[in-house]
Image (tube, rainbow, N blue to C red; front, side):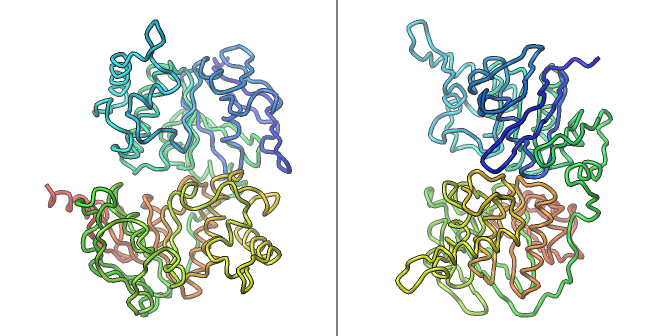
Length: 515
């Protein structure tokens, strides 16, 4: 008989109009890495919120058996007291505080009169940082380290709480492939030390690499638990459980009818950091996108791709910007984001929750907010009926899972939030759409639907720029791929020429030149 550290039995959670969890069962063995997979909205994060006490006892039905004991967690402190620690997809760190201050926030190291013992705080922080491979000093500010290292701080923070069961929700969604593998290898090392982990991820290659067992959720219900003892499971086998059918092709087919007409072009575009104005972020970058073309941008973290896109989109990033920008063959001088939208340029941010959507407002309001004049009268008063009609049409076309277009966007799953973000920009009717990490943190089924939307856009004669950290999707979707490294353009490949090896070789060759 298996030795279970956790059993969740018949867990059911209702929201207004939605059954988020429907009699879900989960069994996790001591010392294993257990993957929880499913499409967006399948209930994965909700189930973990029940386990962590974020959804308190009494707001769901069913039982949590942890280390053989029936538990009722009323808040996150209750679960952490038992050694259950959850790391959410959105990192809960305060940029202006140090690593050590973040690590022990709410769990302060105090002396016998209740004052914080700073020597102990920084010493213990340094010890936990060493465990996760962080070489920085514990008094460094969070804002001064990259996203990958911030993720390691979250893990070190969990270790400082004497964690026995570590839950990671999309831990690698913001990481490049190298950092992702390093994090997964760390989990495998922790497993050797006896730590149990539950990992939620849409990256099925990661599931195959590190998970011992895989539980599949679909539409709020448990479908199956698959053994991956040999760590060689076929990803298609997992997908079949997730979507309920075979997904024979990850990328929809498309006729590559790229026109001669250049829809967008940047020449010698140079951008400096908005705060550290002496730091050049993008240097003399030139590229173009033709009518009916999907152009990809590849590069490691810090390559300057997002900064380039934002600076082109109405100078929404940067300082001392120079260079030329052309839309439909005419040079434009875009002063702000509204100016960019009026000229037919749109930018779908990689950070949908902070810069892309207003989570406290409805799907309807978010769908039309980029170009409200389309649903307003000459006095600027919004026609609510027209707004609702437009939102209904886009929700249907995007297959957004929601009980109503009046639903707050913050209540949607990540994949459905992404669909609302795309709806917003489709409603604005751009000629050129820049998509920054458009499939980050969403499942294979939702990815396929977004790929189809991209194909529909270029079939209409529009142009798409796709920034992605996932090389397979760039290779599967793009007509051409530009490669950036350290703020410079270091390679360009046609669809026929491009391979993962050539792209990485271009980056490595650039690194050698900078040494």
